[in-house]
Image (cartoon, rainbow, N blue to C red; front, side, top):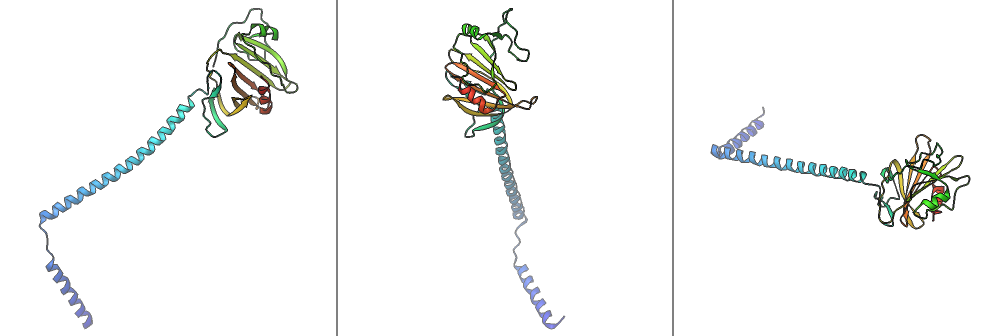
Length: 257
């Protein structure tokens, strides 16, 4: 080691020794108090951090639960609520003109048919108690003036007409390829109906100035779309069901007036 390096090392040692001699060592009691205080502060910080993390997780969980609850509440509501004049779907489409999903959209008052009533065609799945009648019989038995459509697509004609009771008349139409059913239920006063459609497209449409619901559902057996249009005018609930195109179905519905 060179002389200059020896002098520098000695100088550094003297400085550190002098600083060490000037350090005031606190009593052991003060040191333990400081350590205890620091540990308590560290615990408080950890608890605060944990509380913040818990609060955030709790808020997220509450939000998810709320969304699921709202979803379940909406999915279990009837799809149609009707006042004395207007048929409206309970499903709120908000600003969207169309929605997809399962829709709850049942009225049933069955009476046994007369023993001498003619049998319906075997391929029409009639409700229990429906009685096949002539148009004139339907006019005389019904307690209301049911309406026939003024428009039918080419090749479509009336096949049978039935009454379930004096307040319900059903019209069954067909062509070589398509079928059309128009159900009319008369209610004097307020009423409510409920129907269920799974995996369907639903949208609002206008039928002669009245809001209606149009449901499109694919028939897995035929591969064709089934159209349903539901609306209410003058205490009559109209249900139109067909495998015609949406355009033709709407035109038929709008001709019922």
